[in-house]
Length: 325
Length: 311
Image 1 (cartoon, rainbow over the protein chains, first blue to last red):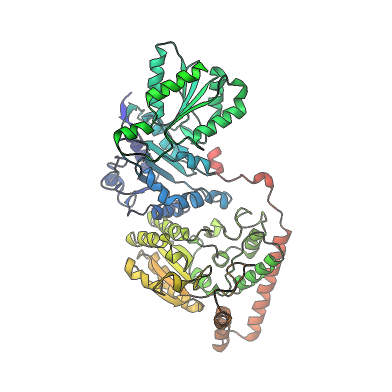
Image 2: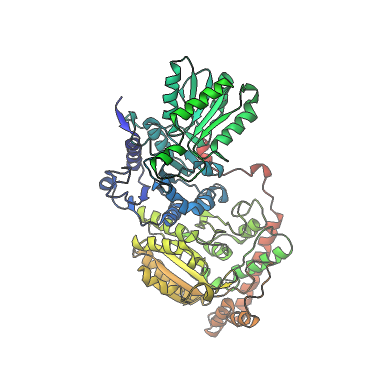
């Protein structure tokens, strides 16, 4: 199969969807002629024109609120945030309006709105261009929160997002977006709420999210040489969360580690651990462990930055500790 | 106007009687604005409004019984009991929602304008908001976006002089919101919001411009709410009785009634008959609401997501 990058995969999905559905339009800063800071829309302006590839002023709250009204009146907006940190200026529109309008209207309005942006620590992006924040949105009723880890998942999940009647947050980790991988040329969808078993194993289960998936797989390949067999689960979406796949895996392995770049307190790892304790307590042979990014604003300087992100050594240590329990 | 007034009076009574379970912000004194603007709108035109939105809902075509039932928390309410006074939704008639947050309606109306433009429809988006919203960032961002993209939108500012209880004079140095229009590059019109025909004329021009693809208009309607900010709230300490009485003397319904008589458009008997008819209609609506069923508690989590997405 041919290999393309994560971003190219999303652009392929976007192009196909925009060709088939004339109600889709994209807004964002520099997503018109320029094609987006991360090449999310390269070539689309020439194909679809300025009304459907709309460069905006730096008015995040404004265009998110505007797209809310558009989604209520027959079109399907795609908001390209460049960096997901910028979404915080629109948080009120998101939580008070976008997440609640279907409910408040008792299901007579839909909210087909896709919000995408780059997340993740790296490249000395510093603290206003490296936030992830996805557990916040998984906490709020009304959002679909998508975290693809490969180009294949990116295309399939993006296509699903562009057909969803619900608001979708599509989060693209900076460490993943230029990675290449096999992607079918034809259109396909991946349903929300269906985890992927990224690697089968017998001794322990690791749930890894976004950029932590390839890091964990690298560690598991190293451990395999010693005869240690780890199962790796990539939830792909955290809202909805496919806890059943995690429970089935823990039933087999008896041990669970959750590896996530976002903060530990009140995080998605805490939620997964609580649900597994609640529904799979008898399967556990050891306490559930978590590896997270450090609970701090992101520092700039490379050695400081490296100190706050989970790395392969830390993941390996955590797996070994878990197996020793 | 009369339907809105009687409905609001009914709701105020119902609030005092304990039939309304949450907030109730009435539109008494401001009826000319919703009436004058919505008279130009078609069902497919999209209205977005505020916490003081009963009048907008009624003028856009939400039946009084659905409004009253919503405030009573009944399943027959326009939001099926999920909204209440501040969250009135009736997309079937183009009432796209009122909001307990000041400002978002401005942005959402711009978004409806974006849809209509993209879909090549000659419909318009309308935002009703108060003077309080005029000092919110949404006003700046929404009006700027609608103007740069020439979206078919009416921004209707109902300047009732107080944001809750903070006087507009303490919140903005320029007393005229309409003056801000030219700074953004769109027409800014100032009208007497208690004169239904003045509002009707200004809105008519703005709606026609929008339908012709000539962009948005900002209309400031000078008005006053004569009841408390919210029913049951202490209405003292921020305005004088003299001021309230002066505005009551300029009541939009009373003024228009007098005009109809003066210009012999209607007779006293005709007007009385009309008033009695509306009175009976609202009483019947309230009775309908009172007799309506409560929503089933088992459905409390229904509609968080589209039901189509579970298929």
